[in-house]
Length: 379
Image (cartoon, rainbow, N blue to C red; front, side, top):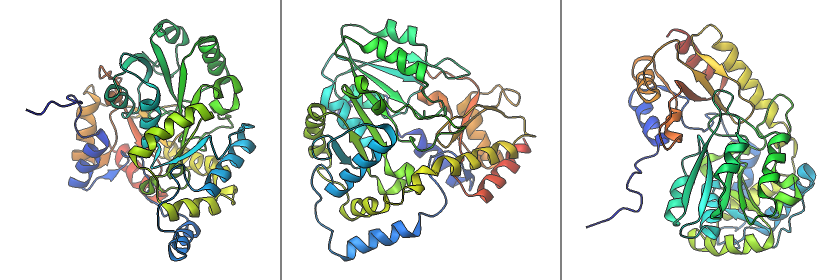
């Protein structure tokens, strides 16, 4: 008789809503992927490196030139020094990096603080490695962290705190005050930090991204994870990376080598060369802020009420003036009856907290957003 290690886990909500969207030919603003093309120069670079023979295993840690480019970028942006040889690991997407980091340091019975709503890969990774998730909820509707509650959640068994900024699904971002509170909590402890920063280049309204890498006293105890897929509109290429001090990176790589060993070689070389054009990632916030603002303008006359979004490419919309249905029920009806797919955020809470809001992805062509907004305004 098979005994599941994840008995309560089925298909992810992203798979469920995308399938339903496809079944009803709806506009898919649910799963977080762009529907516009990858930069042609980047595609040409992948082709270039494939044709020049870079088609065998990359080094387990990642192609060195890519690690060097990552180190240069992080130094320029955050004044953080990471050794590309011993402190940077290229991974098969950020999800693999998240799992490897958790597996590297979480032992049976260790507690891990998870801030809800939380991206759905965190808790399964904790549980598969014998850890115990300890939940602290963001304050609704502003989606701010209650650091007093975080402090109360810390025990002698706390091994790890998982952070995500800019935050999926809410669009919230960490502030300087948040960083100060975090420092106060972890000082004189052995608590480690896992910082999911895959949307680091998608942050709005002139706000500074408070990367954990900016802060030496936090950097020394942290895994910091990012994603080329989010930065370069290449979610299907599944390349991410992890920054961590040498001792943590060593343990991280012990796990990583048995998950994927190495990631796609020609794509790594292509990213390394493409990163020389710094304007691409430096201008990404402006690009997505225009899309956020366009989407908000388009739905002004709808009955949906936006919750402020300061980063990522997701917009939370309150539908309480339209329906008192659960977010799961309403999101399904939105697809079936109105032809627009979204994500019900209750799935990101372990107790399925429902605030009558939905998450919409605006990483779409203008014409896609126009059509979706027209439908939303008719409800």
